[in-house]
Length: 248
Ligand code: PGA
Image (cartoon, rainbow, N blue to C red):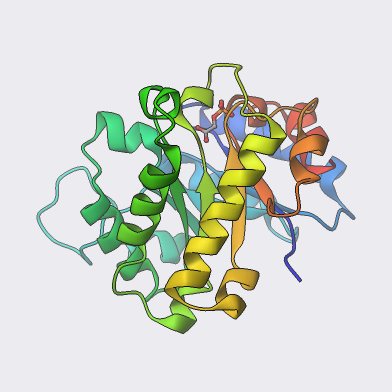
């Protein structure tokens, strides 16, 4: 039984007081909801959000981490530092990090492996650019990303990973994949995991869709049997809109 997981990705947005206002508003609306809600925020907000969500079931995540345990990596943050704050999830390999910050399949794999030795759950992002979709190459592209990310990861660890399918052409563009397109790709990802491991791992793994998810399209997306949640950017920045998505 896969429990839906709706994650907000705040990207590079909000000051501490804005984050506090958001959590205070969201917290009261969220109380009593069964769906898991996760907020992935900039590093500077994590401690504030942990404090504001104390005593609630709201989950807290980061948007990146380094794979080395410590050392001379100016500007980077380690897994231990995130664990110390109580962070429960980290987004790995978001397309913006792949595009603007030289994140590669190799560093994604290293980050996932390092996270699996900790208490923090990785959310692996995969998805094709527009040109690949237009040339109908999305299946091969995404399968290769999944295989590279899971390379060398053992059976029990594999189950813990959350995968988010985010077609790049649908991120922040207002152009969502149709529920059918999203469902097909999430199904392909699940089949790839089954091929790499077995049915049990494939059945357990949480697969999200991301890309212009909003309160109006979430129901249709969540109705697809292979989609277990969403990774939401723009529409996660306002408490009422994020709550309408969590409450699909
Ligand atoms: P969006 O972003 O919902 O604003 O399209 C999704 C994401 O990048 O995770």
